[in-house]
Length: 107
Image (cartoon, rainbow, N blue to C red; front, side, top):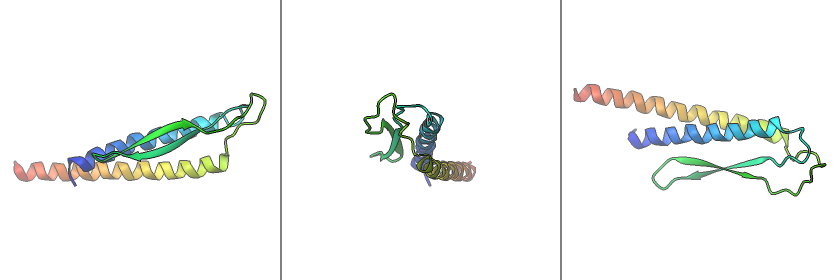
């Protein structure tokens, strides 16, 4: 693992944190008439890492229509985002431990 792995892990933490925030926003507004939920898409960065792009779902709900939030989908996505966050945290932890070992060897 290297510094790039650490940076990829950090970008993963940020991306999955944004995705969890978006899912929470969708769930919190599930009973709001006319609410158009946010959608998250992940994009790989050329130098490594990932970002989360958040956009409004393509929907033409009027203010009197029920929310477009699918709670079943939100639960599944939240579990996936949480697992991704935990994996990214493990990458950061392992990178930190290896970097510490490398510094100890060099010292």
